Length: 129
Image (cartoon, rainbow, N blue to C red; front, side, top):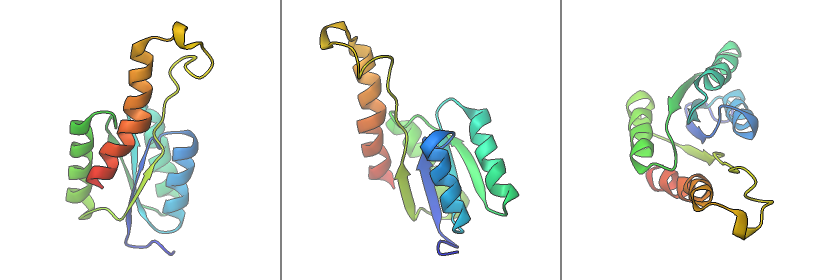
């Protein structure tokens, strides 16, 4: 249990790679914050799976593309666990066919969403963590 007493926030951890990372940190003894934007049920499943193995976890809804959501999330982390030791940015989106379509076929809103989460979300979380 190399991470006993440590707190880890894993963004985008309600499913996929983020969920696996959250479980891995919990298996090493970390208290884990399972961050999600819209998948509350999936986030709770990750929390439940961690707790069934004797770990500690909570789910916090926050859109990492929103600075105020990120600030709220880290405020809750500080109140609940006293602070943060580990930040893993796993949140990411691939809006529609953004990686396959011609630039001429893409909508600006798709680019904004991808950059908001994948690029600025990492910045927002890193500036608070």
